[in-house]
Structures are given as C-alpha cells and as structure tokens.
Image (tube, rainbow, N blue to C red; front, side, top):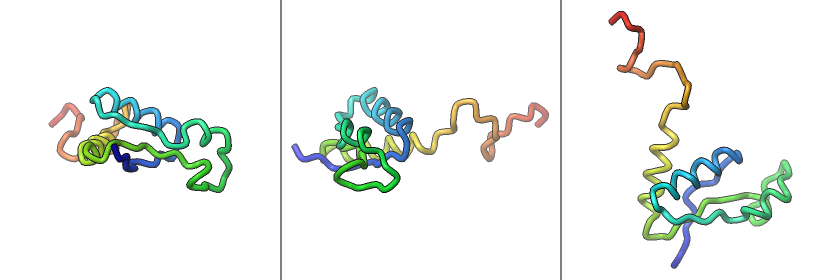
Length: 92
C-alpha cells in the first residue's frame, strides 16, 4: 500500500481535526512525523524533521481530498457572520 500526502496542517488543532474527521469517515490515515514533529517544533520548518503531514492510501486520495476541502469550507462553530444567501436577520 502506497501512502500519499493529502494535507500539511499549520496548527495542532488542524492536525487533530482533520485526522478525527478522516477517521470518523473510515478513511485510514497516518501522520508522518507525528511524534518527532512535536519534539523539535522550531520556527524553521524542516520537511524531514519537524513538518507533520497527513498521509492516506493512494486509492483513497481523492476521497480524502474532497473531505478535507469540505471541512475547510465549513463555517466555524459559533461564527455569526452570515453567508451570502443565508442571512439570519429575521426581518426578510
């Protein structure tokens, strides 16, 4: 089974959220540098040392990318800013 990178999170929260979302949808995933990346965080990201990446089986890449794209487009919980065509002003 060949693994391919589908996402490189910029925060710990992103990492945890995307991994949880993939696992909830039964998409197997692996976090490259999961342990080592947190040992040497540093300001300068070095790909092989401290950059973490979410990897999935090559045959599930398209599914994982679609799920991640939907996840990134979803509004944040508690975000009160209206989206176009979905205003909640109560008057219209």
